Length: 75
Length: 235
Image (cartoon, rainbow over all chains, first blue to last red; front, side, top):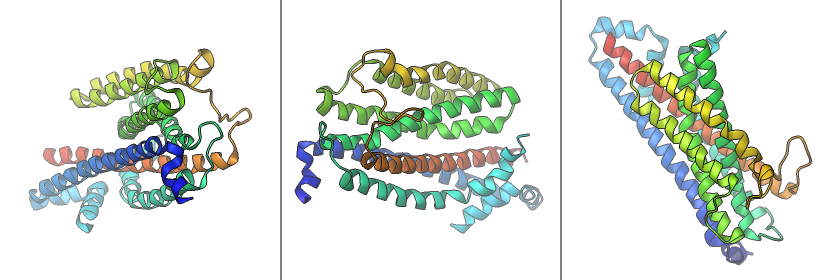
């Protein structure tokens, strides 16, 4: 049973490389998108921090900006 | 009519959803892998090589589905001048492209033990390769064009041209003599695949759908924050 599971009648190289490639692609795509997201989020925090209080209040009046700040600071 | 699709409203959901989708994906993918690699039976002809189907087929289905969705969103966004539709379409593209590549690579790996070759210029495989070129052109267009109006026009044009290829991919195995086998799963007619293989295939399709949803949500949030970053510059 265990032998058959790992050696798959000689097809293990094909099967495991297909699954391996899929998992590798998933991981790479997830990491690339996650890094892009973190970069934009940090850019937002830096830009928001550099605003004076009047502009910061005006920016905070938008619900979406409030959400971005809340999500970024919750981490 | 499209008030539901306003970024301000959507962001409340999309910003919180990824962690739940990731959790669900890990569970469904783990079940799918167990089913596909351990519990499902081997094929009487292809033996264990048939297991490649569980990653190849869902990847091909989803890449085609995403391509059609992007086309629909681009055309609708263009007609109704709705920028958010373009943003949703742009956020779907990375996962669609990656699934297209997975379908091509795993198909090639599957081809070696079953057909004796890594690659054949047959109608199904070539049309899938053409699809990946349209995906690449679409993604590159978003990078090279700065002007919003221009990028909307160019990407819509690319998708309209590319979507002609979708029915060609679907029916290529019926219209021409190909190495690729005809469809085993049909919605309108009888499915020729046994339930012991259909079940893991459906689980893996669900897992892949969840993964594309996860990537879409993360990319969409990134694009919205990017827009808001530009907005802060203008304050």
